[in-house]
Image 1 (cartoon, rainbow, N blue to C red):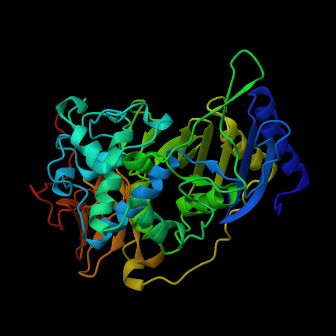
Image 2 (cartoon, rainbow, N blue to C red; image 1 turned 180 degrees about the vertical axis):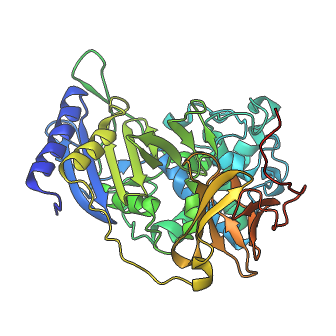
Length: 449
C-alpha cells in the first residue's frame, strides 16, 4: 500500500529502475518506512533466470551481515539481564578460546583485533563447521591487532558471539534470535534457509549480460555473521525497530547505546563508523544506523534515521553492483517531495522549583543557559552555542545524570545558590563570591597599568 503521493512514488520508482538497469541487477526490492509503517515499496527485475518472476514484498533474499545486528540485540538483552558485562573478556564465557583478550563490547564493535575471516575455506561459499571445530582452530595468529586499538571488521568475531549466545542461553544462537527478536517483532518471514518464493543468487558477468548461479549453504558456527534470509516486509519492520519502535524487545536506552559510535573508520570528522552491532553513517545532516549485507549472489542494506522515524532498505540478488548512494537518494527524494511535518509544539507543566533553576548560569566567567526539558530533564549549554553542552535526567536521590556530551555519565547536584557538576561549580553571577567556588574568588577590578 503506497502512502506517499503519486509524484513521490514515481520519483522513487524511477530511481530504483535506474539502479536496476544501469547496474545490471537481476532483481531488487526497496522500501521506505515512516513512523513504523511502509510508506512506499517497489520492485524491479526478475528473481530467477529468464523468464523468472517479479520481486514482491514477500520474496526472500539473503540478508548477509544484517544478521549480525540481530545477534547483537540478543547479546544486549543478556547484558541488561545481568548475564554478562560488555567489559567481560570473551574467554570468560568461552573458556579456552585462543583469540586474545577481546571484550564482548569489542567483538560487537569490530575493535577486538581478530582476523576478518575464520580459519576455514572461503566460508561464504562452503558449508560451515561446528562451533567446537571453529574454536579449536583459533590461535594467536588470528589476533591481528591489539584489542581496542582500531576498527577491523571481523566476521569471525560474530561467530564467537553466536557461540557466546548459545552457551549463555542454552539454545542455538538461531533459536535465541528467533524467540527473542524475530517472533516478537512479527518477522515470521526471516529464516535461516530460503523458502518459496525466494530470489536465486547470481553473479553478473562483468563484460557480458549473462548470469552465474551462486552457492548457498548452512554456514554452521559462522551463521551469526550472515546466515539469515528475509523479505522487504520483514526488513521494513527491522528498520522501524532500529529507528526506535522497539516493540518491547529492547529497552529504548539500550537501543540508543547500540547506535552510539563506538569506533569510526574514517577519522575524526567521521562519516562512517560502528556502534554495538550496528553500522553508522552520516548523510545530509542525518545520523543513520543500520547495516549493509552481502553474501554470494545477494546484497542488502537497511538504514534508519531515529530523529525522523524514517527508514530505507533494499534487497537484491547480485553478488555486486548496487551503488552506495541508492538509499541516500531515496531519502533525498522523500525529503524533497514530501518533507516530514514537524510535531506540533504544545506547552507542558513545569515544577516551580525546577522552573526557578532555568536561565543564566556561569562557569567562571563563561555564561551558560539551563533549560527545562520534558519529564523533569535539564539541558545545560554555553550561551555561545559551542563547547560543553549536555542533557541531564533526574535520579531518585535528587541528582541529575548526564546523558551526552562532555558530561555523559557525570552527576549534577543542585545547591541553594550554585550547581555542582562533577566538582565544576556554576553560579548565577560570574565567579559569585557568595557561592562556594573551590579556590576562592576575589573582587573584580581594573588592573593597574
